[in-house]
Amino acid sequence: MPYENKWFQKQNNHWDNATKFIYKIDAWNDLLTEIKSARLQNNFDEEPFFYYAVNRWYNFWSAMATEQIFTSMPGFAPNPKPLEDHYDFRWLGERFDLKTSVFPKRYLEGSEDRYAFAKANKRHLISWFYQHQSAGQRHHLNNRIFLVCHAKDGSHYKLKAEIEKIRPIIQNYCTTKTPANTIKFELEAGKETLADIIWIEG
Image (cartoon, rainbow, N blue to C red; front, side, top):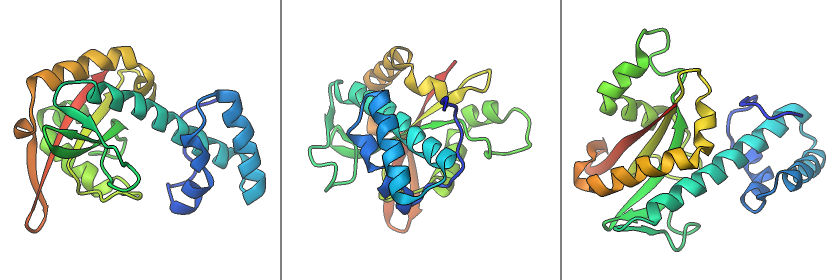
């Protein structure tokens, strides 16, 4: 089955648990073998489960590569216990999550110049992300850097894997910004949340 960017199933804990193998497999053929085994074991429909697993695998490994760019920069440190303390890295001491996202279809759906508006109004798009993106097993109000991919031809998801394009953009961001330059939110009473967007365009 060829890989395309399709989702048949909303993300949920049951399917997440059935696809935990994606964290340990970095070879495509091994992934296909494990997908088939898990599908038969759980009696899932073939196409929805295939794309669920493959999309999670693609997102995870592209995110890992991106995270390593951040943690190679001065002032950044990886989380030594990611399974216990739910954040991706420290930036000058502040804990941050990293979220790589394609530009969302549902953001201001039906409006013209959605992308231009988002670029001019980062706060608005960040608020939308916090309201609409799944929290999964992490608290969705944590400090967060959003890497937002936007391709003119609509194939936003492909940009996630273009690490050599992403690398200098992140490096420039890390050398010119600090947490003090991010956007501050009060998403819950008494708690300040720091967030920002880095645009990846193609």
